[in-house]
Image 1: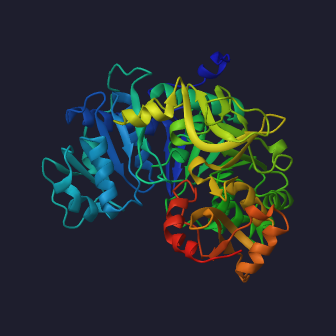
Image 2: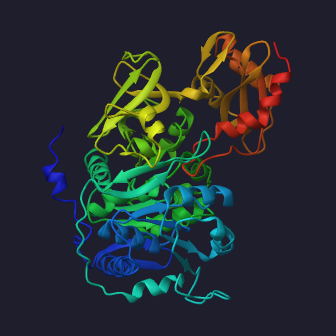
Image 3: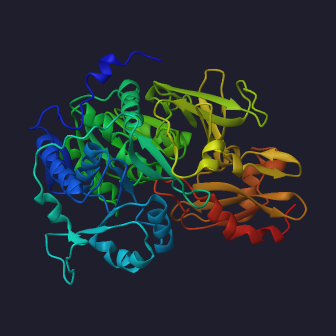
Length: 527
């Protein structure tokens, strides 16, 4: 355990902003001070109490990114209610599952999702109140208010005094549903303590300061925007700049970063690639920008070199983590970006890592096994999933399901999901190794490797490739490239070309979708 007294002294309670007049949040044309956020969240919290919401009750949100999301978040925190951010990309049956699984008493939803929620109401078991947030203004055509269906503006009608509720560090703060790279999601429970320790870990390792203006690019239903970068910024009294949920445009984002003098930014690799592709990148005044944080997948060495050439004064920090594993567990800091290309780095303060084989033995440098994470920020468990809890959370350690290895310097290198490991001809094959080789081809923009059923080999190595704009490749060309750089048994037996890879909101590739889509390639025989 490390000494965090100096950090905890800077972490404010939800009720005492560092500076009430300082801008806490920027979203589109709206700027909200800490004092305004404090008062508006008090009003919402008091209205929730009028609805009979008690500590531990859930409140679900189906919203695009908006300033109100933070008001709801802090309102829930003040009274011990548990926020359930819902993924707006889910299909109606998936939303129905998440809502009924979490059992919220209130569902808050944006006007865009009004028809979806209306269609689901009959199948929803627990909600007592449905609150609609109009996309613009206060009017909403055809929406009929009653005692259980309200417009969001009604929530501001309660008093602005802070509610006095005994909320403890071990009480749940939110339930975040996993992004579902392997199928139906599970709700990871985060306590107030998890959030506090996670914020402290980021402040210590990643160097957040009171003058930071932090760009958040992800959706609020993902831990990347709800906790990563945002909470340490708030706890240090900085400013969060939240992007809209849809329509990422690299030139528009750069203009915003210039205007607001952004110091830190959270951008996924695909966003970074789009920015680096801009021919006029050097024309933007990014002199305030210190660090770009990224995660979801490793940034290839060629892209790191390109980043350093075009943004020489900006640091690049690659992050690794998972919702149930404390958000961010490791960071590969700027000084090691190129030297340790492909690495997820070392543990953040207050995190521990180990790698185990299938028999539970600790593995040394260079040996591949499952990555386990431990720390005070690790989720308290899955909501109503005792069997999954027993499998995932073992003696204080969270089994990530990811395969990895440490190098001689203690840097973590990921080798893919444990379930993604390919066994072909009795050989264990790790997709990450092949993906790294594919990225070396100048014609390839993105690539992933999956295993599909094969009658002869058990599984066949299959590369799914996205070529760069204007480039074309053949299956034979891809296979030949791999044969030159890998042992023969590791080369792809099949290659599929697609326009874009299916991804979760955290930009992780959904390999299970690709396996389903291309499983019939296994009937085709390649040497």
